[in-house]
Image 1 (cartoon, rainbow, N blue to C red):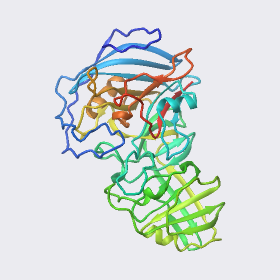
Image 2: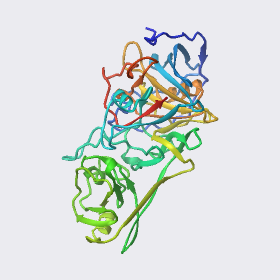
Image 3: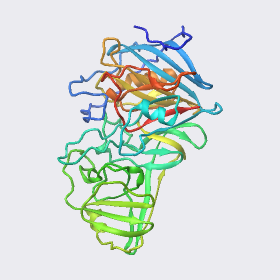
Image 4: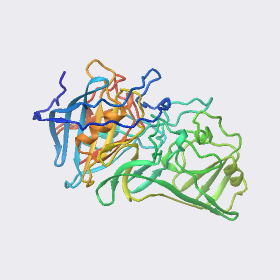
Length: 426
């Protein structure tokens, strides 16, 4: 079956052949569970790609706005035939921008179509892996993403420790801090963002180790603001830097700071909405011991930012799979599966969003290595893998249509509520 846009489209007749990719596989690590990782426990490990790389054939095309073109495509790989959607965004085009799709709170989830329509996006895909399931008894999943988020130049959250993230195993040299986004220079970038922050009080200065994130480093202190939402912050003190399922810490603290003054100190981590102008500090282990020395009425100054080589206006977490036009070595060998990816051209002027359907008779999906090769053939120089499996979704609003609708075929049979996404606006 050839998938085409329901609106009037111009079929693209040329056929592009993907370059040969033979990655040097590292010993595969079993992928973590949960979060639509694109993997299932029964997923089979696959060898390196064959010498004859598959073709990428565009089957239809539609201009959503000046500088924004959506295409459907067919390809093939270890999962046999696969179909998908690709959006090419020219970041130089007037009135076009790319931004974060979000559900209104960091610890919340919504479908890509709901987020796109609420924010009036003309296209969008799902974003980062997230805390969809939880193994710690009595601790609710937060729905929060694993990596950093930047929206409108403002840091919303930082990355969890690598051992606490969801999704396939990370390639060597990458981390949960990696993001894709658009900088203040209006160019697309793949880079890394680390949290730089402090908590200053009468007893000295503490290093801030977390910002609105579902897992804190062992011994760390994290800050939660009104952006977090109402979900319990208990998950932040569970697991360890190396293993998401390790026990929760038994030594915890929570300090509420209202307009620079401590208003409450507790040895228990709470829940509920955080008012504007208020910061809740959560500590575990040694971080908890330091926070419990504070007293009501103490003056505290909390400062933080996400630091890196790029000053991002928008960024979302995703682990690199393509660098300088070549797939990274050591990409996870499991698959094939539904996948979502994003990439940028060498000059940073183009952003590419790709969704490949899978787990059906009409589309078998792709491996992470095949996804990287697909991005490269589409024009990307650098790219990241986003959440996959049942989370993979592509929505678009064609000219004249009242709302964005789902254009791919989600493997769950319907859209999954996700933590965030990438939106295209015009």
